Image 1 (cartoon, rainbow, N blue to C red):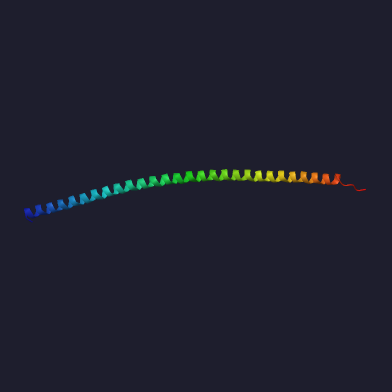
Image 2 (cartoon, rainbow, N blue to C red):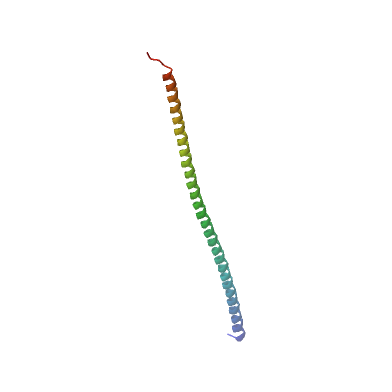
Amino acid sequence: MKKYELEDQIEQLEFRLNRKEAQFDEVISTNSKLTDQLKNLWDEVGCKNDMIRDQKIELSNIKLERDNFKRRWQRCIADKYEQKRKEDEKDKALIDKILNEGRTDN
């Protein structure tokens, strides 16, 4: 081979090498961007998981509060029913007393 042919081949190899280096740099840059995007996505997933956990805790507390109100309401209704029953018994006893006092069984 002649000198100019060798120089031409060297230039072609250098050109290919430069192209490959540019491609590698581009791949590395792309991988870096993808890594950053993945990190951001995982951070977002973590934030959403935290929010879901907080909402589950809040929902649990609300359910407990609802159950407490329900028990209090049931006690209130039971007390009202018992109070009404006692008043009805007193009224019945009073009516029976009045009827029995006015009665003469001779």
